[in-house]
Amino acid sequence: MRVADVSGLPEGVADYLQSEGIEELYPPQGEAVEAGVAEGESLVASVPTASGKTLIAELAMLSAVERGGTALYIVPLRALAGEKATEFEEFEQFGLSVGVSTGNYQDDGSRLADNDVIVATSEKVDSLVRNGAGWIDDLSCVVADEVHLVDDENRGPTLEVTLAKLRQRVRNLQVVALSATVGNADEIADWLDAELVDSEWRPIDLRTGVHYGQAVHYDDGTQEELSTGRSDSQTAAIVEDTLQDEGSTLVFVNSRRNAEAAARRLADVTTNGITDDERERLQSVADEIRGVSDTETSEDLADAVEKGAAFHHAGLAREHRELVEDAFRDRAIKVVSATPTLAAGVNTAEPAGSWVRDWQRYDGTAGGMQPLSVLEVHQMFGRAGRPGRDPYGEAVLLASSHDNSRSCSTATSTPTPSRCGRNSRPSPRCARTCWPPSPRGSRRRRRRSTSSSGRRCTPRRPTTPRGSGTSRGTCSRTSTATSSWSARTACCARPAPATLSAGCTSTR
Image (cartoon, rainbow, N blue to C red; front, side, top):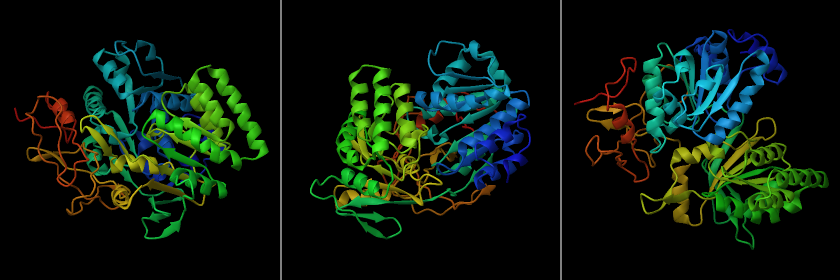
């Protein structure tokens, strides 16, 4: 489908998109248009990273504004709110106004009333609803980015209840939910009374696997030798190998401190792989970084950038992040070590390779290091591969032993949901993943599904009484996944809106 064939957009938008090189829609985008996303129909888009989810959201919001309504874009992170607001400001040339709000939870948001498109975190939207923001009633379209976070034990309950409140308050509200890794998109679509576009299409292929020993063991059964050499550093060996193929690398670590330390070490590898022209460009970027602030972090970042490496985390100033992202997009910077902020959708170039070095992180509730969920791993994997520049993307977990490699191999499997039952009725809003999956039968997906259904595993009932606060559910075959019992407790504290076809059922 051609962009010019999409109806309901403000005048000039189609021509603008074509001037930006978007003439033909990707298959998932075409399916979304056919499902009515530009005509006010609610939609769940479960498609891989780099397959065009943002454009689907833009088509929905722009058409909603053209119909005289207001659009709200909900993001999980403050850093992502700023990125998206800047991105949407490109459409201000067509008479739209864009506002962003992330803090001050006591504010009623009246200053946002004149904006056509509003970007906010789920916590901020929740506070705006509770503080009586009048413009909420004028909403015609709400986009929930990274909707799989409805299962997050911290942000999930807020996102779930906020969406329920908005649908209860605004009749005929269009809800567009986006995710690259949700395992039970059909149940999310049922909950939102939405059409479903569920596709595994990617603009380029993605190879996934695990590195241990002296080789990469891919999920398709093939192996590729990758020696760590005398340094015995997997990360350094991978970056060096990628440089030989003129590629770039994104390395995920579990903390800001580790991101900065990794960038310092990897700078010694990349400094020998940059050209004179790239070195001159990097020196200019480093000078700009130092000009942003005179902090120690700014100086450390500039020192690494001069050698072709960088780190990226939410603790950096916005100007720092933008400079790093632009240089990485142009592949002047060869490697970026990052915290999972980048995996959550912060805009940057897709590198040739995405490598997850730290697949465990500290969990205070468990009292030690715990593996990442399959969902989080696939969020990181999805960043690999740049359409038009790479023949394929490569995403690999780093394992230090054979036992660890077996756990990592499980983590690279397809994300699968858990059934979060409450009494005899399962909640459709658990986008959690379990590993390994339960050997239960598959279930037919609904509507516009183009991929096979995932398998499900059943968590045990919570051990604490209902209404006593956040409880944990334990997947029947793993201790890694947790249930969003708090989300259902919050939802069922009051009668479910009649508009929610699959809302919580109170048994009081």
